[in-house]
Length: 416
RNA sequence: GUGAGUAUAGCUCAGUAGGGAGAGCGUCGGACUGUGGAUCCGAAUGUCGCGGGUUCAAGCCCCGCUACUCACCCCA
Image (cartoon, rainbow, N blue to C red):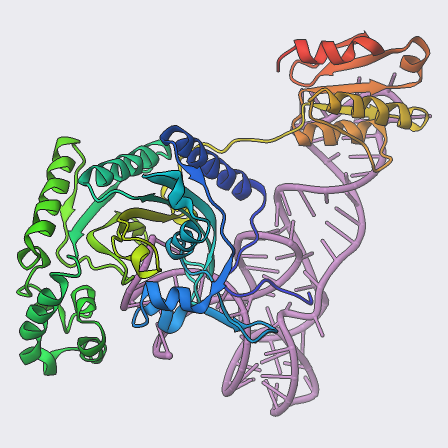
């Protein structure tokens, strides 16, 4: 019986899984280089209030999903459940405002939410996100959507659906909420208990209730788009028409409200057809958040994706293999010469492995084969005498005697 | 928070009526003391998730617990 197990909802990543993860992360970093976004790494924990105040204290995240603890100084800290609030905090704290607008940032790292784990949902998960800070123009949406398309394309994710909605701004949201409340008030007794509670705390969330008991009433609920102000309406129209112009297929989802409070105007999600955790990516505009954090009024937009869900959705992405190029086979008389040669090859940038088990020739060849190397270099007594080592091509089985001093060049000039 | 399923070797799993704990793959070694992949032979690894009960006897039956998986809710 083992003494320790990994905590619930966490995973150990190794082997093929690690290779696929690195592949996806590599593609994402390359993508960002292409789009002129620079990476930012913020702490894994932040003050609890940062999330309370941004994500919203009636949200599921804050109410039941945060890993909150007190440190020895009595501070309330929280393992970050999402990336936008920390990035905005860092943006202001480090005066990145001085770098000019727009600011293009991306992040990649672990997030934490206390939930019941299941397929595509972990308590610690890896999230990639971008933030485009400083533009209120629909052109910002255009860039973000293009990045999103480019990303899904590079990762070979098929069968996704783009959902978009507007959630208004500080001027018009209250009016919509009023309209929604008026609509739902007489229906209240017919709704599920969750919705009865949400009616008071956060009416918007009634829209994405999946309870069949509430479903019939959703159909006739007022739509955001019919209640937003002139500016928001114009913005939304510009956004959708640019989607049309870019030939990006989308559906207007009047029930899309998102789980975080800081969104304004544009909110969107990419859903993936397979699997119960169908939300692959989520994002939106957050024009008020920076001001709310004490900065100058600065509009911004961004999105976040989970690496785990990307991996589930890009199954046919080919797995890269990582194996050494050379295996140096030694005998009792040549162990140190082998170690020396192996070291030399590695310094020349040739991935090399040699025996540390004291195995015989046959078993070293077996290991070389298992590791998938291209060449085995055999250093036996005969070879030592003439200072010429046997280089064996593991694919063809051919072998040649090569002078000790020429081996590095020999390997470098032969591809495998 | 709600519901369902599973738990036997490193992995995938079998285990018949309650009576000796197994197979395949993998690992290690040998056949072959200087040549891998193919083949053959051999070996190691198990408190059968934990605790209790029934029984002469429990991997199997009963009760409790735990862990994991899946789903709901919500999300990424």
